[in-house]
Amino acid sequence: MQNNSMPQPTDAELILLRILWQNGPCTVRQIHLSPSCKQWGYTTVLKFLQIMTEKGLVSRQAEGRAHVYQALYAEKETEEHLVKGFMERVFAGSPRRLVLGALSASKAGAEELAEIRALLDTLEEDQ
Amino acid sequence: MQNNSMPQPTDAELILLRILWQNGPCTVRQIHLSPSCKQWGYTTVLKFLQIMTEKGLVSRQAEGRAHVYQALYAEKETEEHLVKGFMERVFAGSPRRLVLGALSASKAGAEELAEIRALLDTLEEDQ
DNA sequence: TGTTTTCTACGAAAACCTTCGTATATACTA
DNA sequence: TAGTATATACGAAGGTTTTCGTAGAAAACA
Image (tube, rainbow over all chains, first blue to last red; front, side, top):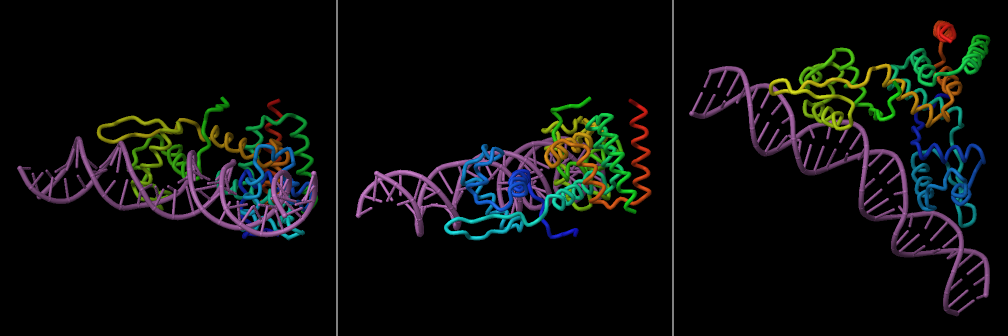
């Protein structure tokens, strides 16, 4: 499942991908109407999607005069890919150090710590 | 301690910062001799440091004809700052989601999971 | 003193990211 | 049919990042 050819989406690309993950395949118009796209003009969104198609982040299918775009990688897969790259660059690939950094950076509260502990339980069961 | 004006160092900048954190204040020459800088020419390293000075990542002090550079932010502080930004961008600021992503992306082994559990114990003690 | 080394400063190129504006083709409408 | 709305395509500007090359000053040396 770890696809090394997957490109790392940029910030703007991630915003568009989230819309696609949430709503399924969309036209430029549909994406542009989403509140998280209010910041951009229509052609900006179009341009992003054209670039994302080139990069292989989304697929494109003609539907009448318009194009329908679809995310090529699942949300989870993409997030893991991004985490992996970040962990490599900043924490020499060490999950322990990343988690340490995340917890102290976020001043995670007791609730969150408990949730994370539960998460560990689940992961250890799987092994 | 959370300094919002701290800029996010880029990948190259992070490599130079690591050398400064490890060795203390250095001249360009000293940094350039470090093995992790073999990839760059001398003036490339110099240019990076000039930019980092402008950005406020390092301070510069004349020492004879040369300049001595020093990291302005501690390693821990910088890593937390980077994690915070990444967590915001990719995981909507949720440490739980970041940790989940990190653990499944890295396929952390039993040892690492145990270490992280120990880390949680420490953090919960502090509260 | 003349040459070589060793500094910094500056400029610039190539790649990527963000953002539109304009052009052009197609469909709808009055 | 003339005009408006709606598609995509393309180009380009301005910013950042990475990477050097060259110029000029200062120091060391022969």
